[in-house]
Length: 368
Image (cartoon, rainbow, N blue to C red; front, side, top):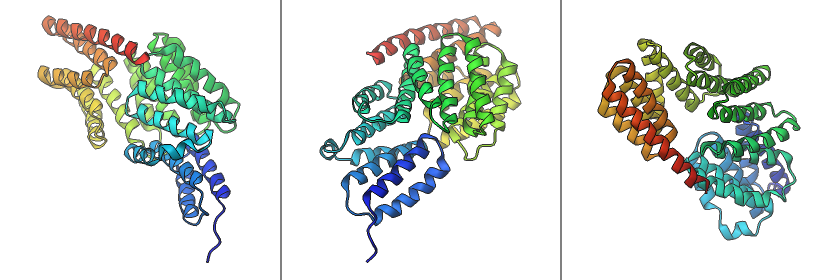
């Protein structure tokens, strides 16, 4: 009979695996997971280590965008058994549930889970874990427009990441969180500078995904200011970055932004190419929000289909995507104003104001 693998050795392997996940090193994480699965099959019985594996596997599945599989793993963990475990495992349970809620766009639920996790984090002596926690809380606060809370947590994360080895990827993405908040506060010069810092760091460190993400976000920043040619160049740069592993969501989003910039520049043929690429991915990913956003820009700039435009705006409102509803309503209004169609321009300006008011109410409710 083969000798059983000691559970502390498997626990060490799982810790190393989680390290790769926190660094967004998908390839090494995938390899390490295969090794651990084999080790677990031959491991001496240890329920805590098996729970530990399930939790980190749930986090791994979130990284590779297998969200349904992640939720199934989290649901399978017995609550009573979890209460008997140490603070670290309890922390992971609440933290990863919070991350799942974030990915499902239930931001207030995510923050509630994070606050429970924080009570266990105090007893986990790991600076990098504190950085990861603050980073996730920062992006959750960003989504409900609590910009100053978001910046505060992002700066805490940045301080911890900078003190750790080989964390250039997370430093770059955390800089982008700060820049995105600055952009939403209309501090565009500060936002541009910080996005450029993130891109330069990612480029110097040969980090393909943060580099592509940086160009995407800087393109949004330029588009918001009406600097359409600069936005176009950034988005094209983002698509030209060769990713070691395809990232369908980022590719979909970048092509969506590229399409709307090209449509605004009256380059309809090129815009339709990007639109079709984005729509294909949105359908593949079953991303109803992006399908609606794509239908909106197509209705405004290509078909002039008012009914489709209204229907797609209602999809965004149903999903409480008030920022997008506001932004795209105003985009429609400005387009129709240029066309001297004052009736539709007035209608969509009103739509934008109504969505803005709903957004403020929603943010207050989410922040409570």
